[in-house]
Length: 508
Ligand SMILES: Cc1cc2nc3c(=O)[nH]c(=O)nc-3n(C[C@H](O)[C@H](O)[C@H](O)COP(=O)(O)OP(=O)(O)OC[C@H]3O[C@@H](n4cnc5c(N)ncnc54)[C@H](O)[C@@H]3O)c2cc1C
Image (cartoon, rainbow, N blue to C red; front, top):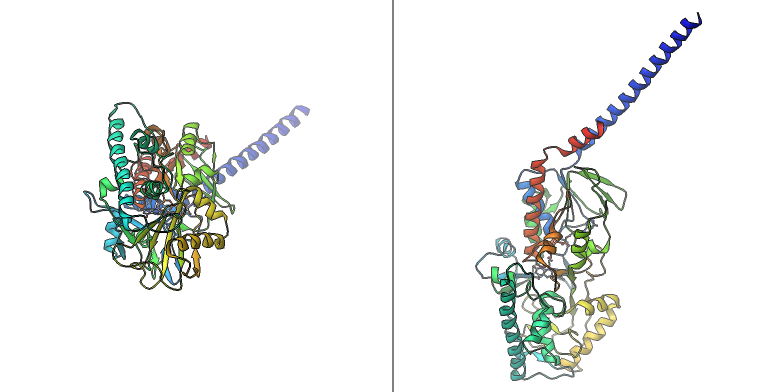
């Protein structure tokens, strides 16, 4: 009897256990279905940042048949470092302004689009420095004085080209030196305020960093100009330089009444974490608590943002990658706009640019009057870079205005009126940029740059800084986006459905 009771109890428990096991399997199956459903609704690719490189990457993905991507953009607009704003009733460019490299053997895609959409742009004639250079305490330099300093700069440029060629010819050796070292080897290190001003115009004005920290081999000759041509055009159009970005975006994103209206572009999403610890899936977390998963992520923020730690990685990026990011350089280039009640500077042919030589390198050195671009606007633009940019960003606008006015009074006399408005973009202080455009630092090897652009598993990297020749320019960002799209597409083709595959392993 006891035995029978025991058997029955055993059978009952067995049934109960079976039921429990059934319940457990059912639960797992439901989790599987839910995960499957969410995996199915996940995009294939997440693109972090909708600047030129991100927009260009998605265009190529779209053209290759990958349409299930999403953008997570920290701000409320596309374009990133290409951004116009209203100043004194005119649209001025806070970021990219020039269509560089025009008239050469290859077509600059930025210029081609600008032509197509009839963007107002103006040829920049850099040939009149000799007539428009002013001394620290006022008064013009003579043409002979400026020509002598220009000859010195030209000699440095020629020597740098020859040296760069020699260093590049050394097979298997990634040999380099700074631009300043090349000037020293040429026995022509700029020393006087005038020489430093012209040196600043030649190098800092383009690289946003000084020749002391800048690579000779990767800057001279400048591929932007050898490839695309030597001419520059300054964009001054109410639609802004950013209309080039929109022109590309419109080919594949939805616009309603000329306004971007595509659910795949999600604004105000500040990415704070990229988790690639699960094979085949990447999870991206934003500051407002949202989570997105995909098969791959493309990161387009500037190298300064990557250096800042705004985005963390799980697991931490490998050392070779972190090192490549840490050692590259992001320059700071600040265009300060000043509005005056009347004109007091010379206008007409050959007066577009004027220069101020100060013993402090780059101290309000490089001026441009915008009469041709914005007729009757009475706007002047002065450019500072690097440490001067940081200083100007950190101080009140009124202080900067007072400093600029002091310089202008040295140049044009005490009777000139004060500026009534000032605009100072603050790219360095902005945590979504941390600077303006990248510069190749001395000693940074090609191998390191390959590491800079290389993916880590399914985390891909784009952005102007990842283009080895055209870094720093809008067209570099454009090509970098295309390259990243290609790399991602290869991965997607290889792994038909990595999400399902990893779910299968999880299930097993
Ligand atoms: C002052 C200035 C002057 C310039 N002048 C010229 C010029 O005359 N000619 C020229 O060709 N080029 C010029 N450039 C360079 C050109 O603008 C850049 O090379 C190009 O726009 C960079 O595009 P990008 O896509 O690489 O980066 P970005 O434009 O920086 O795009 C990255 C995007 O990522 C977003 N982002 C950042 N962090 C996050 C995050 N955590 N989560 C989500 N989104 C994030 C940013 O908001 C941004 O939209 C200039 C730039 C500046 C700033």
